Image (tube, rainbow, N blue to C red; front, side, top):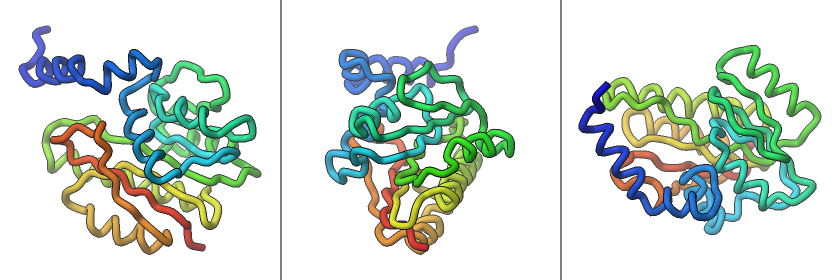
Amino acid sequence: MARSKSSHRWLKEHFDDEFVKRAQRQGWRSRAVFKLEEIQQRDALIQPGMTLVDLGAAPGGWSQYALGLLGRKGRVVATDILPMEPLPGVEFVEGDFRDEQVLEELLNRLTGREIDLVMSDIAPNITGVGAVDQPRAMYLAELAIDFADRVVRPGGGLLVKLFQGEGFDPLLKDLRGRYEKVLMRKPKASRPRSREVYALARGRKV
């Protein structure tokens, strides 16, 4: 099947992308690792010994990067609707965490642990139709926020991908009601034309 012009453009951009090339050279699983790395260097959100959850983890770049910072006492529980090649030190739950059974398995893995941080790089499959994509993106962000409410210890944190557009301001206001401090970050590895930003929420209120 012939590829569309837009998919040709995406593939060319992808393989010309400096972050894709750097990820391949340095042995990272995805270019997304450089988004987390920049936020980490600025905000030091991941600390040795933490237990964290990585939502939308596949192919595993964020989990891979986090492992290197957590040390032997740190733990990562990751989940994605897509399969992920095993990463030593990462517990992985495959499935859609909107599914009650998958969510139950994820929560069972976390039982008895104090969760310091939830990271979510989840995004919907982009159709290019804003009226479809934006509500889906905000819905996934809301799910990540609600999940963090269930598992993150008081004072803990959340890093969540958001897309600027309809619903963004109310969601941000809601997030600020749940955490002591909410910072917005747009890493260099986020493609310039993308409306994605990351909300770093710290100090979960009880």
